[in-house]
Image 1 (spheres, rainbow, N blue to C red):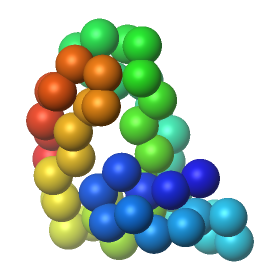
Image 2 (cartoon, rainbow, N blue to C red):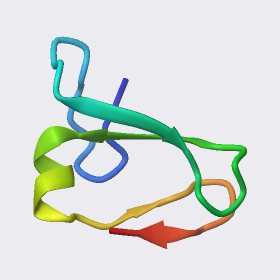
Image 3 (cartoon, rainbow, N blue to C red):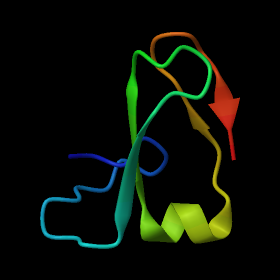
Length: 52
């Protein structure tokens, strides 16, 4: 798994989250703990939704 914000490999990480896109619900969003804490923007590759 790769963080959609910073592109960090999360294979050995345990502080990450996975959720469906809040807009289209069709794309899975994966974010590392660091990007979540910082509020780094992410975007859905399917519908272009952007979120913090």
